[in-house]
Length: 352
Image 1 (cartoon, rainbow, N blue to C red):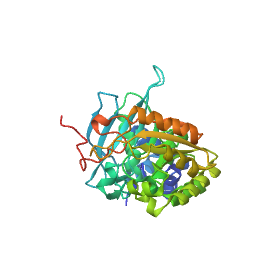
Image 2: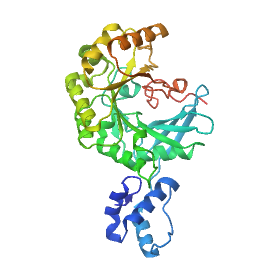
Image 3: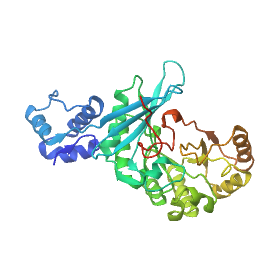
Image 4: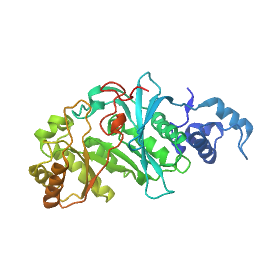
């Protein structure tokens, strides 16, 4: 079986190719060529042509099929439709960031699964059900394809697209390592985030392995009954277990835990929601990310400006920790958080 480039870290690639006489340096060169030039080199200085010819026979360079894309005329978010090892398409999103003129860059929001098994009620991907895990190279190649289509550099990656990253743990972590390697995409590990709906064993493993990447935990409610209504994962990994897992993560990393709160009008923006959150957090340092719900089905609605501002006042009064409002763009092309579904719910790719 051919050895897939983009599917192994440079160290793993060296281990796989060392019987052919491949040095660690050559493995890094091969990795860089695959990730940065999307090719297998035909010749390299100071490398035996025989060794390189043998390597070329033993490796393959997989590529995603780029099926479609849309760019929002409203905010510049772009959504991509890809196909990889299986027949099922999946999506990724390019997020534009502008700090000042001349420093434009992008964040790639990548998928880790086709569909999702967790069934969060406000998420279109969750309503698809689980189809399959994506392989490491399929995740890495999402970033490569987005970079190839972009006029500015991709400087960050968030595993917040389709799927639950911690249920595809090893492939996701390997993809993050490849993307952050100097011979890979050389993206800072601090600019790579893994998001989870609350898979406590995965969080504990992430903490134990002391990975340098950021972790984002989606909470949405600190009331177990209400949380289970919209996030069935509460039944498998209830709030007390989740809190202990994020405490372990904080102790291991020394970093604040980023907690995501999807704001749903009339559901989780009351004063008692802020009180429950403060009680649940206790002394674990967090940063709270507030994000409006995006639901094309019309079942859930974002709060009004007045409701949102009142909730922030409650958080200031009771939580006493940093609160950030996160913008979720691309809603007009179904690219916003919770809207990725590849045609299974709503119409993610409007007619041309």
